[in-house]
Length: 146
Length: 211
Image (cartoon, rainbow over all chains, first blue to last red; front, top):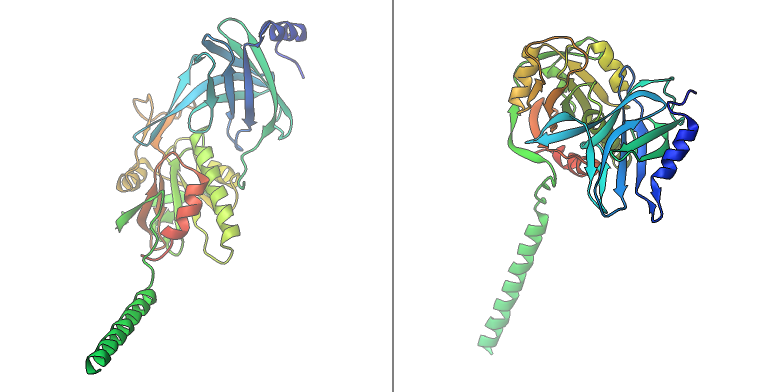
């Protein structure tokens, strides 16, 4: 599999995101759900936690497994759902922002290879400051039963 | 002595009357439970005559609803978030109901696509199969979709479009409600967003009880 960024750069950037007082931000509960058959956009949800006393802004998300990743938000107004593209997402100091169904979400386009449930997917979350956090998860499918 | 006997007799009559009253109250059927999450219409609403096509390209009209309870969601298959999330919830709720009430009728699920420009019966067939048993899909002309959606209070509109064009990257704004159609094909209740599996599991058995 061809990585989108040099591995050494990954390591440097990940280390750069850490300071003497620990990582500036962390990603939890990340899940990537494969597109339904015949559809092109997979979706991802996660939680971005800001561990510092100043807000942070996420400006770019990428994945080696997909050609492009976009941030979007489903907005419910009087029961009507509309989707809006997000150019950035700000997380307030010592707070978190959750990407979840019916709200903010990631759309992932152009899988590099066939989408196989259980295969690893990496998300590179980049801040306006240039810091990057990388999270790895495995590809899921929508479950019809819980 | 006579007065004392009368008093005792009166007391006995009152006690007996009280006992009969309690028995009569307990004998009355309990009033039907009310849904906790859904809004049940005071009276069911008849649907207009409509014609759509199901995922097999067959006619889906008012008769399709007869004999089954249906949870209806208006969406489109290119929707990445709320549509598949809602269908997954409905499917999960149906699955839970099948375990909790194995001998009872299960509600069906119907996705009505408000994006007929991209959602053909063939694409709907592939899509709804992804969500498990009891899930069907349908779509039709804008006129038929509008007629049905208007009666059900459902809004949908292609965003950023000056007219119909089969471009692939547009979105369709749509109401996120789940409409309940009863087994006579009438509009019976509605769940408003945000949805939860628990809401459908709790209320569908109540809604499916005869009014």
